[in-house]
Image 1 (cartoon, rainbow, N blue to C red):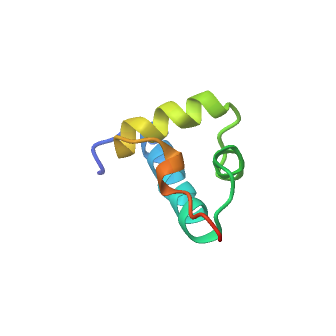
Image 2: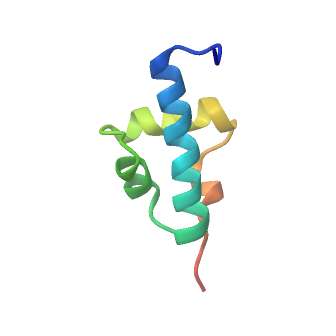
Length: 64
């Protein structure tokens, strides 16, 4: 239905869920990846880069 495998769909959802954590809550990149279900931070970073064409730290909200 979505044109993706179940694993690819799940990873896409995880990346977009991590965006919410990064942008609204300002959590650390590693914590955001872990909270959405990625066990390995390098896998999260690769998946994020694949989906968003940039690194996750660019989306992190910085509290002043």
